[in-house]
Structures are given as structure tokens and as C-alpha cells.
Length: 636
Image (cartoon, rainbow, N blue to C red):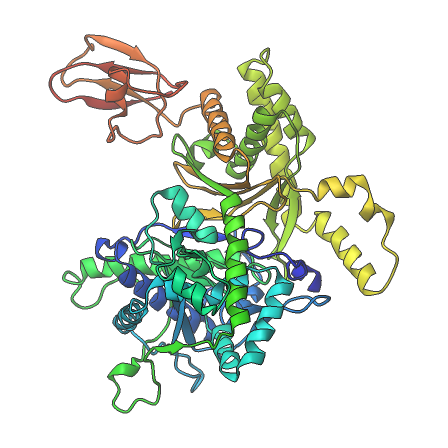
């Protein structure tokens, strides 16, 4: 089991190198969706219900096609924190099983409030209602706005978690040695169930939203009192300070991040849990928001109680309504005592983080021409097809075959996590060469696509069944190191180095609760590619350092369009008009359809030559008539 915690060993920063992110879909309730404090209250309340249900062991176990999965990782989901260790030692993940409070971070300032009752009579109950949390957050925001950002930037303690681990360990020791109050403050943050981050920022677009969830934003602002600061010599004078959200984080823990426009997501420390575990949590709390909204719609109809059942089984025992309650749920502010050296360390950390953020290029590809339904209808694996689109997109741009990595779930085994699946197979190479050859026919391309996806699917099945080789070999290497045995020459060979230099680091993790999932590249010249396959669309979040991310995404998009051109459409539609045996004024057009009626005007665009798709599939007859158009289904 211990070798699965290899992510604790590297000295590098967890930002962009380890921590992934989720971006939620908007809240179904419009009144909540665009309000930061309402959205944050909703997500926090449902998260607390999930925690209570988990502590009471009422969470339904994960399963895949009837096979139960190991739930061990959920022990490290809440109340856990990655603790940096000095050089020569590995970081550790500490878990407080009795954690009952939530930490809140707003404009670089920390607060917390107690939210769960202590375990009594075998049950853990939620102590705050959604409205209680709303009032708590309003008071925190009011207090957080009392100071200007220039003053708050100097004490942005969270940015220290973005340092290389050894440097963060040194800074943390300085914090603790400087003041007993600092040690107590760190204990409160470390032991919190999770950190609720309120960003004083509204993302400009989907790309900006992804970047903010991955690493925050950078915004340089000028000191108003720069000359006074220089005269006082209180610290190394700086003309500018960091006003972005990149410092408003605590990367050693699970973070729920909510922006000022209500957009929300999760950034999580990855060494002790995998994406599948975080996804279960995210899915359940989002589903609970949907159920809550549905109940609010039907409450006037179902006067005896709504028939819709909650996803999360947890009881609320509201402390604020109890006279002389022994549980104080009021928010408390955490104050750090910072020396001059610590203030300088914060500034240095911010500058280094700024370089990393500046180097990152995150781009979101939203492909809406087809999704899972279309791929499955053509008897192909959706995940395998997306993997081939990534490898082929890279090849058509650079003309190179590079190593691609995809994690495959192995939680059907006790303490199982993932196996490393290598998508760059000989079948994938053949696909790249066939697809980019001018002499290849559509039939040849289709055959190459089918062969490569089927081979990929077979390897995924073997990997999920514990028949992969990567983890086995790595375990042998770890055992040799632990027992002081000579490391076999194989682990220093060129083949092993090439295999472990992952240029295309990919992962499929998502469902309808999420809009995006992503992470950074694992090598300096690589790409980090998280994707979500939905019924009628595919979402890619692609990150790189100083590479042509958008151009790469465009190559994937073009590949997908070409794939749609050679596969069969879901259905064809014949358009006629009412009470006519034979259509008149017929124009024959070719276009793609996802099986839905023409609610969005695609047919109108085609008639007016507005369609910008490079290719079309299917055959339909469109009839011009001043009255309504009747749509009739025809067989292929």
C-alpha cells in the first residue's frame, strides 16, 4: 500500500504539478446560481450532510456493474491535511477523525466555524442549517472587506503552501517557532473538514474559470503608500503587490472554491485520494442541490411530503435554535503573528507562484457535435475514441509519437487505486499514419480507428483487472529501495525513462454534475488533459507550459469532426409539410444530427448557407413553405 503514496516524495510544489480541479455545473436554482454566499452556503451544507453520513457509515458503497469498490480512500477525504517535512523526509497526510469544523478563506484571511455535533449515541449530526451558514458567510464577507487588499496581501499565509515542499516545511517551522498562537492557528486549519474558499473574482470565460480553479489568478496592483513603506524599512520595499486569487488558497487540503458570480468548483490534494473518490463527493452534493430545488418546486403540490428522496442521509440538529446550546457555531477569525522574515517569505512565494501561473496556458475545448451516445451507437468505446483523438491530434500537429498516460481504476481490490494505462500502442501509431496519409480512403481510416480503439479497450480491461505492468514494476523498485537491495539496471534503462516521460498525461473523470475537470502537465514540455464525456458533447481541459495549447486543441477538434464524417449518424430526418403526398420545392442537403428536433435552428442555418462545419453526414430533404414544417422520422 505504501508505494501508492509516491506523490508525497517529490519536493516540487503541488500547484500545477499534483492538485487537480473540478468545475461544477451551475446551480439549478437561478437565485442561488449567481450569488456567491448562497451558492457557498448550499454546497457547504450538503457537504456537511455528506460528512455526517460518511461518519455514520450510511454512504452507499461505490460499485461498477455490480462489483463493490474499496472505500478506504474516503477516510482521507475530510479532516485531512498534507504536512510538509524537511529535506530527506517524505510529507505525511494527517487525518483528524474527530474534525467538526469548516475553515473559510476570504481575501487571504482565515476564519472557521463548528458545524457538526460530537458523536453521541452513535450518531453524528449537522449542527448548522443552510441559512445559518449563509449568515455566517455574510458576517465573514463583511469583516473581510474592512481591510484593503494592499494590507491583506502582506499576510497571505496560504501562498506558502505553493512553495516547494522543503521550503514550505522551513517556513512552517518558522511560523510555529515564532508564536504559540501560530501553532494553534495551523492546527485549526490542518484539522478542518475542508477549506471553503470565497474568491473576490468573477471569471471572464470558461478558460479563465478553469485556470482559476487550477491555480488562481495573478493581478499586479500598485502600492498606494510605497514611499512611506520605503522610508519605514519595515520590509523589503516593493512597488507592487499581488491582488489575484492565487494567494487565496490552502493547497494542502480539500478546497471548495466559490467565485463572486456563483461559479464553483473543487481543488484537492491528490496524494491520498484519487479523482474517483473526489468525484463521488462532488456528484452527491451536486445531486442533493438538484433534489432540494425539485422539492422547492413541488412543495405546494405534495403537501404531505415530497416523494423525492434525498441522496444524502443525514440529520440536522440546529444548534442556533437551542437555548443555551453547548455548541458554539459562530464564526471565529484566525490571526497569524508574522515576523519580518515570514512576510518576506510570503512575498517570495507569491513571486515564484506568479512565474508558474504566468507560464501556464489552460484552454478548454467544448466539442458539441457528438458525445457518448453517438460513439456507442457506432459500437466504439467513448473513452478509447477520446484517447485516440488526443494522440492523433498531437501527431497531426507535431508529427511525433509520444508517451501517453491514462489512469485506470483498480478499486475493486482492497486499497486499490489506479493502474497506469499506456495509450500509445502500435495500433495507435498505425492509426496516426493511416489517418494523416493523403492516399488513405475513408474505409482505411475507419478500420484503423476501430482497431486502435478496440485494442485500447482490451488493455483498459486488463489494467482494471490488475494485469497491468507499471504499478507492479514500480512496487518491485520500491521494495528494493526499502530493503536496501541493488536496483535492477532495467530501472535506469532508456526504455524505462521513455516510458515514464509522459508528454500526454490524460484522465477521464466526470459526470453531469461537472462542467470541467483538469490538471497541469507532469513534464515541462507536456500537456495535462482532463476530459468529461457527456451524452452529446465532450469537454477537454488542456494545460501546458509555454506550448501552443489552443492550436493543439484545434487539432483535436478537427480530428473529432473528421471522425464524425466517417461514422454513422444517430438518425436521419425527412422534413416535409402538412397534407402533401409529394413534397415540392425540395432542396437536398447533407447534415449531421444528434437525434434531437431542430430546436436550435440548425436546419435554418443550412438553408441560409450559414453552417460552418467542414463536413456533413446523413441525408435529409428540406422543404420550403411559408407555413409550419412537419418533421417525419425515416429509417436509415
